[in-house]
Image (cartoon, rainbow, N blue to C red; front, side, top):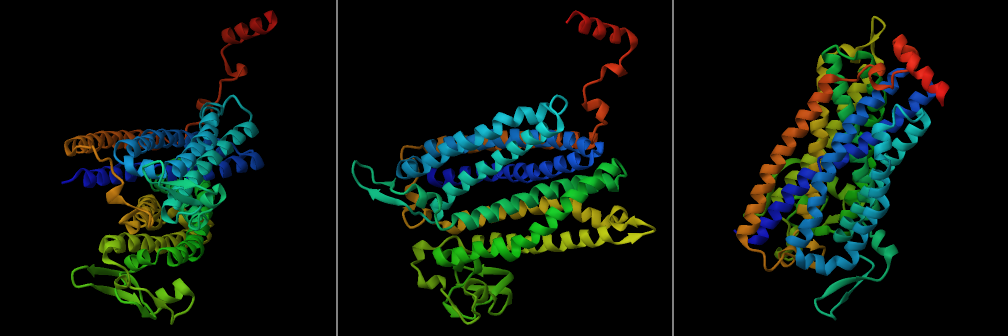
Length: 471
């Protein structure tokens, strides 16, 4: 086993584990802002209680995201030195911008959001929450921008002197607005909003099943369910479709791998499920005739280029790309079904009560939705990265040429084992702490707010009065 293969495995493990957390923080941030606005409009203490509860969960997720994300920046230098030299002039500026503009915004107001609930007024606390959520979105913007440049590089020139050969930025505007950036940004943010909403739905549905914190749970579902329904539909018919169109225009060999298209053909079918035999160069499964041509080119008779139209050394791992891609789109269709079922049972009533609150099988679907949205988000990222192979920068630098030349096999092997052990411990700790917060549930406001003087025993009141008199 080579150091390059182990480095790929290490980055896959560390990046996949990290990618569990940012979508939650992005989506949960949106829900927190909505809850804060509802509280300001209604003055109902239930919403303030929900804010206190979910902000604690946000803090836990944020900590895990930071702890696991910083590792990848070190990996660029330790495991991917040739890549870092090649793209440093472009990639480095985008990562630096993420740290300066996004992380400082998010981190700067995080303390106010986490610990200012009983010190700041509702409006200032909402402002702090909004700025933290904005920082999370802004951070995602720069990261997606950098990754999109790797998918569809633009705004650069190749400089051969001084050695080594490297990409040099010629237009910052073209770099940040590389052709795949906007479709990938909208697709990723929408997926993150679904993840955040599904986490709130999952926990709230579990409370209803256990008949605990029912008032708070019902309120949280009223906020999260519309977000889930609207964006699950938009993700499939608009943002996901625009991302597929972009792949069709700029990465046709990736499209062929995603759908297992071997020979160029008109009226190309789109598979719902299937299996790719790479040796026999066949794809079998359940498909809808002409749908791929229609979605890719808005013409059912359009010709979709097959893998055999491209050199075989530019093919991605085809069956792997095919499977993770179809996992993503099938789960995406499932989200629409879950969302519409939830909305239907929300509006249906029995004896004056909403049927959603008392229908266990629908509530269990909502409980399980967080696992489905996380798998869909991960499989979408896997599709983008597996489908880009063998290129680490599309048509410019191969992954096989991007590693650190002096890296020994035993060094990478030892670090992979270390990351596996540490991340297992971190994940167990995360689940333990998250479960502890969920089991405890939203605390009564008197436990969260500072104790007012009027509620203290007489002896304590005297102390406060004396203090006020002295001052």
